[in-house]
Image 1 (tube, one colour):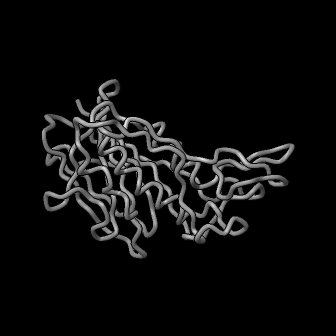
Image 2: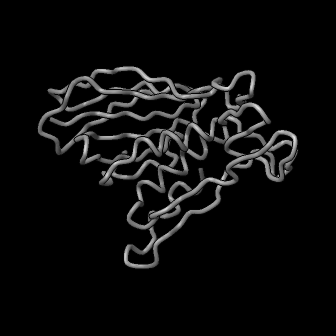
Length: 218
């Protein structure tokens, strides 16, 4: 989370960045106890808002390690765990999936008091526009132990579809997925309403949560 603003000051005309092989370690590097908890995944989601906001500089990124077998692994945490018959994605896997499936074509500015959200009030955010679908895509991570309400003003658009899609992940910070509870920490989706007249969307951000919101422009 401390690196969410890492690339904000990078030279836009310099070398491009491949943010390769990153993962959040929750126990100071002790391999046997590092787990893909929701706290780890949420911190990765917060970090990735900075990657997305600075896509002109950070042109590639990859999580690692990718696969681990429960009876023979070298690194922990890992994105996907397998045995000889089944597999499950960790909370970190679903964060990566949400970023992968909700990429825009153009970076948009998303600020609070004219500053990018890189931890103020424990919030981290990025925004983009997808030219193919004509959608504004918002990503917001709330690392606070309290719910927060935010009203987001969507400037620069002529008309909005009042029906938007919200995808959410939220859980206890120490929660993990297992073979028995493979979807314990995974995305849920619902419809929300945007005030098309005022161009505003109101969000109640649950404690320890990550949101993706897709709003169609008309």
